[in-house]
Image (cartoon, rainbow, N blue to C red; front, side, top):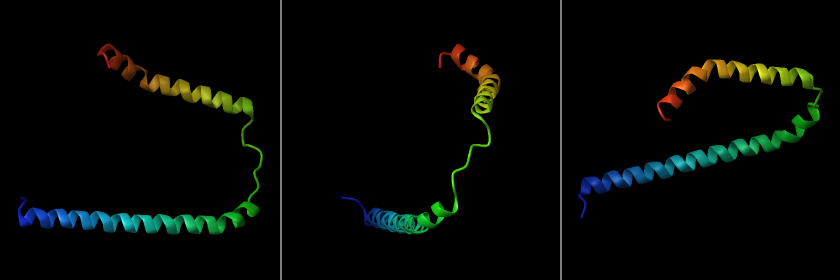
Length: 85
């Protein structure tokens, strides 16, 4: 049998977790409700336009990004590979 102090701590932790879960749930519900209330208004205000960059430019940007990541993290990956990670 656990002590009274341990029982009180367990009860406090349980009630605290329950209270926090309820608060988070209510906040999420409120946020989702506010988003769904304003969604029809926002969709009529904004129209999807053409992308800023063309398809070729986006492909070039993606290639440059990947090249930069390879250059930045290449030595780290080689080091970890040599260590058996």
